[in-house]
Image 1 (tube, helix red, strand yellow):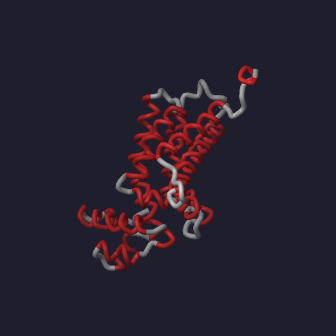
Image 2: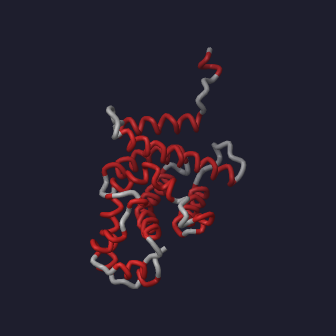
Image 3: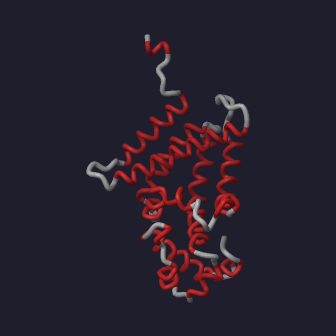
Length: 220
């Protein structure tokens, strides 16, 4: 979380620092990010950086959190339009998000995240066992709680909040896997297309919603 000195900066300096962060996070994964490159690009002394952030992880998760905010709102909008149908909402949201993530202005940053950078780095020594207390992860928890309140449970075999959140995490895991698989496939001889990614996600989501086993009627 940025320190108070960052929030006291004028808009121009904040914008310059965030632009420098975007450039560096687009270039490299968190482990390879250079604070020196960021301060040089932002045209600030290295000492000033540490007056604004504890370290590069703080800047990384603050920046990533800002990127996620608009996408989260889009998902909330989908939940409202589908009257709380989490499966329809996630299907529509994936169709929107996969384009934004793979072709939008921050595609290179999402590429690093989609390549499991986020899943690995949130367990770094910087966060330790209490990583869940970091503002970024507390924000994710708040989003999870909001989704739980918006979901229509009447058609779900869900008995309590814990089971609903487990379902949400399962769907999110499938979402992350589908995005990550798309990015990793781009290095292969036959890379996956966005249409392929959408179809893969839709199929897996359908298995979760309706099961992978054929019904007795289908079996004859």
